[in-house]
Image 1 (cartoon, rainbow, N blue to C red):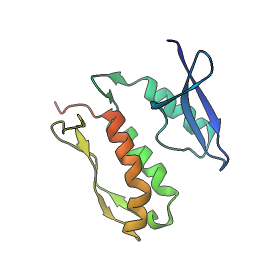
Image 2 (image 1 turned 90 degrees about the vertical axis):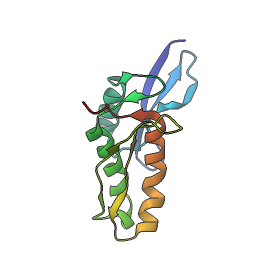
Image 3 (image 1 turned 135 degrees about the vertical axis):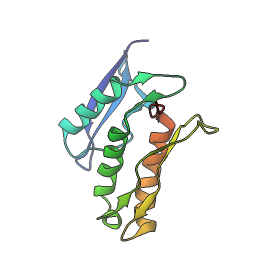
Length: 135
């Protein structure tokens, strides 16, 4: 099956990318951006980074810096996350879902609000991506 990608603006004025089939049908899941972006350029840049990832089974390998950037983009939209600091992404042996990393918040003005905004994105990122194994 041939897959193409599109970048579109949603009703809230944010941009995201997603995969479409030859007949124009939207392919869900792994083939869509886990984060909404403020600009079309940000969405296009993230799509390029996603497509450049090395495929391993069952996840793509994505650099820690790119994942942290996606988490930061999400946190910027949440008043409870303003000024929040997060730990760096930490590598571990793959868990039961095959993910080899995790992150924890360190400090946020409104921890429950911040985590309710950021954690679903972290879970989606953990579902889609692994980080490089340490050398």
